[in-house]
Length: 88
Image (cartoon, rainbow, N blue to C red; front, side, top):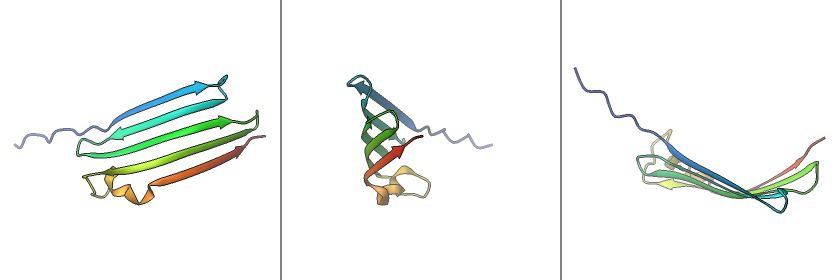
């Protein structure tokens, strides 16, 4: 009987710091694969009014692991994105 393969576990860290009476937040997400792949996502969340929100983030995927289903294979989606939300 073969020994079981060691379990691999994705490690993640998230931090959100509210500023300016909680209308502005600086955020950071970091996820790290044990095989060397990573996802980093710094961002800013701005609540302009009670109904309007603006988010600006940057995605960085990379690392040594480029296999399918791993974080390193998502390097094509690196970049900035902006999200505008209007709620009723």
